[in-house]
Each structure stands twice: as C-alpha cells, then as structure tokens.
Length: 596
Image 1 (cartoon, rainbow, N blue to C red):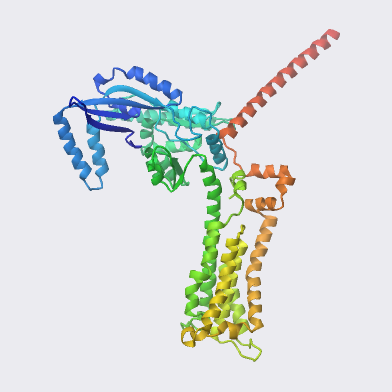
Image 2 (image 1 turned 180 degrees about the vertical axis):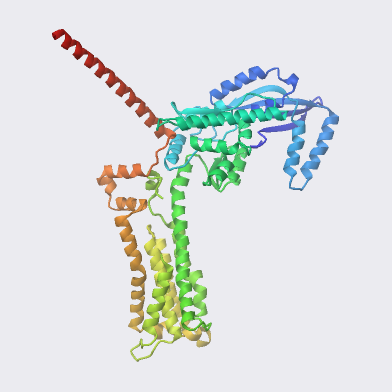
C-alpha cells in the first residue's frame, strides 16, 4: 500500500480451488469499487467507520471478489507483461493492470485499530511530548500541516490530540458528497462546487475582524484530488497559506523550504517531494527512513534536530563557506599581485610545495573543526530561543604590500644581506598561514582542545615542514635549503613582520565585531553575553524578555490554546465587572431618588 493507490490487494486460491481477490484500503477508495450487489453492508459499515473515526482510530475497509480461471489467466498474462517491462511507464502499466482487477468488489466490513506505534504518539491517549514539540516548532516560525490517509473524523481527532486544533478555532472543512464522476459534466460540477467552497472560505477569512481568530483547513483526499488541478490549485494554495497550508504545491507556490516527516511506506512520496525528508524508524518498517535525508527514532526528537542541530549546521556551513572564500582569496590574490608587479612574467613567488600544502594540510583542519564543532550558543539555549538565527581582498593587499615594502629594497639580516625572491615568498606565505588561521580562531565561538590542536597545530606544522624540508639535500629541497634555520629565523624583522601582518589583518574584524556587539548586536550575540556574564541568573526578567522575543506568536499548539483560554477568562471577567458596575450605578440612582 502506498500513498497514491491507498489500497493493497492479493489474489489467493482457497482449499476448494476458488480464486479470490482480497482488497483492503481507504473507505473512499473501496466504496467506489463496489459492485451493485456488494453494497449490502455499506450503510452499517459507513456508520461504524464514522464512529471509529470520531474515536480517533485508524480505519480500513475490506472487500473481495471471486475470479474464474479464464479471467485470472488472461489478467495474469497482462500483469506479467507489465511487471517485466523496462520502460519509463512501468509503474503506469502496473497501475492500469491492477485497476482492471480491483473492481466489482463485495464489501466485507471494516477494521479499526488504535495507533500505538511509538511512545507519545497514541492518538486517543494524553499526548505530552508531541504537542510540546509541535508547539515549540510553531513558535520557531515553522508552518505545520498534517497529511493523513485516515478519515476526516480521525484527522480532526489527531489534530486535537496534537494541539494543532483547539476549541474556538474556526474549522474550514472542504468536501463533497458522493457524486457520480463518470461524465464530464458531473466532474465539472464537482470542481465548481469545490471552487465555491474555497472562495467562500477565503472571503470568511478576509472579513474576520478578530485579530486573535484562528482558522483550520480540513480537506479529504478525494476533494484534494480536484483541489490540486491547474484551474483550482492556486486558489486552494492561497486558502491553505492563509489558514496555516500539499507538499509540492506549497514548495512551488510559496518558494519556501519544506520539510516532510513520516514513518511508513505511504509517506515516501511526501518525504521525497519535500526539500528535506525526515523518516521515523519504527514498527512500520524502514521504507520512510531509506527514502529520507535524516532519520530519528521518535517524533519528539524533531525539535532538537531542527532547533539545535539545524541552527548549528546553518551557522557552521555559512561560516565555513565564508572562510573558504576568505583564505583562498587572500592566497590567490597575493599571487596575482606579484604577477602584476613582475609584469606577468609567469614566475611564481611561492615554492611548488607551498601551493600543494596550503589547502591540503595547512588550512584544511581548521575548516573541519569549524564545520564540525562550532557552537555559537549551547543546545539548551537553542531550545529556549528557537528563532535565533572577513574580507580576503583586504588581507591579501596587506600581506603583499607589507612584505614587499619590508623585504624588497632593504637588508633584513645583521650582515646586510637582502631578501631574495625565495625568502620573501616564504615570509609572505608564513604571513598568509598566520592570518587565515588567526581569523578562523576569532570567528569561532566554541573551543575545545580539538579546535586548539587543529588551528595552532596547522601553524606549527608549517614551521616543522619548513625546517625538515630545508634540512634535505639541496637536490631535493632546492631553493629553500635551510630557509628557516639559516635565513629567516635569525632575522628579527621576519618575526616582527608576522606580528605586524597579524595585527593589520585582524584589527579591522575586531573593530567591526566590537562595534556590532555594542551598537547593533545579533540575537546570538545577546544570548552569548547573557550566558557568559550569567545575567540569566541575576536578572530573570531580562532573560524572560529575551526568550519571549525569540518565540513567534502562533495560533496553533499548546501555548495558543492557553492564550485563548486566558483571553476567554478576561472577557468573562470584563463582562462580569461591567454588569456589576451597571447594577451598582442603578442602586445609587434608586437611593438618590428615595432621598429626594
């Protein structure tokens, strides 16, 4: 059974040799495939299904059909051809052949089960973890909707259990009665009826004057089939977005990033269609997990996946990409400036081994540490504040001009020797290594011993490589023979140049970040300062204010339910106070009249 078919069938042969087709699926699908003689229990079954749906149970309708040998043999031949085809239309052929057999069914009855797939997801029991998770995600600014193959009554029950629906929320239910769809005229009438319901619902939302009014859109599967057609889907999208919003339509119509989460094989299509797919591993199998981008064990873990790891990964990837551009621009433009200075002679100022080691060894580990371990705020702060969300050109100019000005026309050693191209190139490359690694150290907000080893170890690895490579025979080391030990290290100006370049390349960033934190701080800057100086413990009012700013007002979830209840109580108290004031005023007037 998968999301498009909404049914599953099996053909068996009983002990007496009779061939039977057994079919189970959604009642909207099975009822449409019943024969005229197979509707004896349709009324009673529909009544029972409605009762099961109102109780929050998962329902299926059951039907069967008797087949003779000739009919089965002819169908099996067509089915075998469709199954063994290798064309792009294989699925369509299988669906067409299956549809030929799954008709003229005799209704057997229906089943209903309580969904207890995992802890915290029982529909009819008291849910604590799932509503809390949905509430926090809604306050983080996510728009949430539910797709289910159950009856509309079951879907409504699930909505109440998960706090997506609440008392006082105006429900917009779009559906149509069972209409014969064989002719084109009846299909047009159904579409017109659905379009009229969508238009009326949109008008009702527009004329609503209560700013706290909340709307819930509920639509069944058969109606959704018509609502997603080209001439209706955009009106339906506008209504869905106005209410709170299916996956493909929301993704294409709004341009927003969509995430789908499911736990069964029938959720695979939805998971694959969304930008981000999350599969829940459970007793329904691993189909959803195998088709998803991320896998979790329970629904409640979705909050930590999005609010904590989503926030961290977003910051890590953004900073890592910026740093990649920074270090490569600083390195590449330095080479370009030298080529322009030498009239584009083709001579490189860096040794070939420097070019190989720059991205592979000397600057790769700090980037890995930034992309794996960076945490601008702790995980508990992310959960409490769900909505928290370098210039390489300058560095290259500073590195090139300072090194050129210092080493080009003057001696740099005590014996009066001037720097050759190899010495100046090595000094310039050393400044690049220092500048890009110090810059990433200033960018990081969270340090462990791993980051320290990777950053300062990369700088130390450069000096170790330069010393060991320079000790090799001149045939192997070439122009950098004893470059560090005999040429650069004894010269104080080499070390002073490194310090000067580090200061010149990092001070503008320090001034910028200091000014930003003082005058126009970002959300995570404020949270970092509060946690660092323990203001959350000393000034609880300020901490509560910052947490409230990090949560978006929502009309769904447990928080919205509590707010709505508080507003109702305030209205009742206000009315009661008004009545008492009127009674008090009337009593005063009567007393004054008696005195007169």
